[in-house]
Amino acid sequence: MVPVACLAVWFAVWALCAISPQNRSDWLLENLLSFATVGTLVATFRRFRFSDRSYLQITFFMLLHAIGGHYTYARVPLGDWLEDAFGLARNHFDRLVHFSFGLLWVRPLRELGFRNSRMGPIAQLYFSVAGIGLFSMGYEILEWLVAAIVDPSAGTAYLGTQGDEWDAQKDMGAALVGALAASLFQFGRDGRATTK
Image (cartoon, rainbow, N blue to C red; front, side):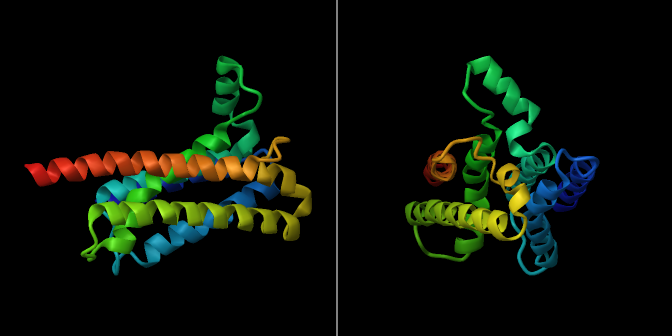
């Protein structure tokens, strides 16, 4: 069963990432939403089941998030490699994860909001992309509030701005670009499915 395998893989990687993270306070802050997301998916599994493809996409995103939490997003080795390889000014692993959020969560969001809807595919994709934008904005606000209230000393690592005053806006933009890419792909698939 795909959902069970996804949960097992996520838990194994999460457990490895829980061992000696770079910053334990940041790791805990990063994982609060992971606990809430996985807990909600497990608790609602019998009442609402996503497609296997959605579970795979959610799992891939959650794995990226677990890795980011382990190293702190500004210190993930893959981001350091990209920074060196392409001469970037900073570690862009966080942008990769925000892009992946948009790319990988459009389908689950569409399934959640429009499973029994008569709304056409263009409208479904439009509102799914809008939902990604809303969740991304909400996450940036929540991230700021948590950093300011819960643990101000871990705030810099948690926010991962790396000195970029436009970090939150760029992160939201990356999520929207990912969501648009996923929507164009899905629109193409929907069109091919109706012409067969």
